[in-house]
Image 1 (cartoon, rainbow, N blue to C red):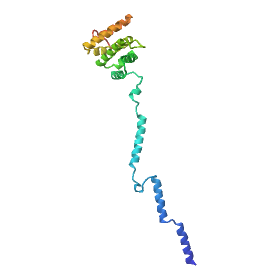
Image 2 (image 1 turned 120 degrees about the horizontal axis):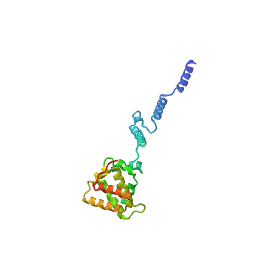
Image 3 (image 1 turned 120 degrees about the vertical axis):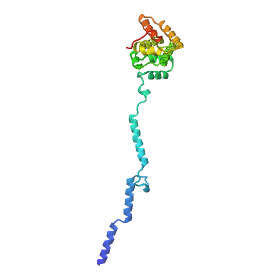
Length: 216
């Protein structure tokens, strides 16, 4: 009887012990779970560079979203120009001479000393004088008096940056000077107050270089 019982006990023990096939199956299943779904067994343990690149791009995109600056046109909307380049760029964006003059007239007089703290570009000055003359002679204005607006801007330039104003005007040729004289004559005929006429005389002297101005 002893061999029979030993054989029976060994049989029971072998049934309880997992087979080598069961062990290998469990190991493969565990590796598949760790590696994640959809990963080939041949690629186990090999780094997924595409995944790293994707994560890196995603992180870079998040950082760019966090620090991406607001476009200048949006950021500076409604703000004053800080230099002559910005003023010229805004004028090019606007349409008619009257629209440009409307915008120039909204700039506070004292702001011109900061905008033109270095110099006034001679070509930009002639562009401003030309659009003033066009606006004053077109008769297209509906809400504002273009002659009054032109005088306001010229008075501001003469008062807050006279040297730069006069220096830029000194580059004008005969054609530009002739147009400037026409504009000044038109504005002088539009003046009704002595103080206004006095300011226009200062503007005339600076534009035609028959006088000197001092910076504030």
